[in-house]
Image 1 (cartoon, one colour):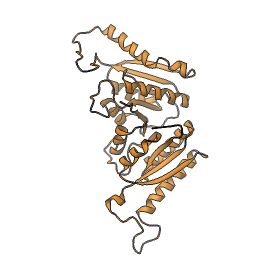
Image 2 (cartoon, helix red, strand yellow):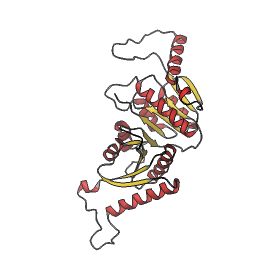
Image 3 (cartoon, rainbow, N blue to C red):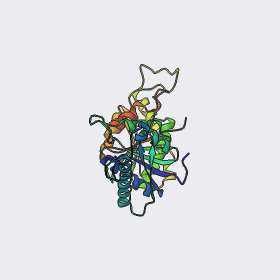
Amino acid sequence: MNNANSAVVVGVDGSDIALGAVRVAASEATRRGRSLHIVHAFVWPMLRVPVGPPPGGPAEGGLRNQAERVLADAVAEANAAQPGLEVSAEIVEGQPAAVLLGQAHDAALLVIGDRGLGGFAGLLVGSVAIQVAEYATCPVLVIRGEQRPEGPVIVGVDGSARSAAAVEFAAEEAALRGAELVAVHAYWHPVSLGPGDIVPLVYDEDALQTEEAQLLAESVAGLAERYPDLRITQRLVRGKPATALIEESADAQLVVVGARGRGGFAGLLLGSVSQSVLHHSKCPVIVIRHAD
């Protein structure tokens, strides 16, 4: 369970993408008044590979020393990005996704690059980032696209519990950044809200638009009172949710989505909209899971 002392956690693997994630994580920690914890997953002992210096080789050689250098470089990057920030670091034995998911239990935010050293060039988002976004018990910030210091925070709205959690998180994030919050609700046609619902074949477009606009307004109701200085824009879009959010990301500094919305199947941990946004967003994405 996250608490007031929870750190912002970032995973590193020695790649340039991971160092970029460290810089962002350091900024997020400073913004929140939290410490930064840097983690490197060390898988080699599990594979029974020798990790010490090779026989006859230099004392600074070997996989363990290499891992220590990865951490040292990441700590130096964090200190350079945010001087004075409290930074800790550790090597944890295990597979990267499993190690990061273990760290998520006590994290305020988990930051990860979209692809690391093990990523294939043709993949838009690596398997580790997808697994972490699917299963993490804390918000996950995936660093991808362009890093913009300006621009709005975009949040996807669909009326679900996960959407409500995403809206609340996005409002706080926008307030911390001094950014505009843009709540986007895209609708295509009437949808089933649960088992047994019958979707009409014929419907009144004006009535549907009014109903969807009301859903959007209700989703952001109360934010102005809690964040009086926050500029909030409601954007109702006739179209597919993923497409709308990806288009909005072109000028945004952040997109926030729920892990799964009202149209998702119960067995899916990461819905089609959040997956599409993770793969195609033009800016970093935060995925929010809501306790069932």
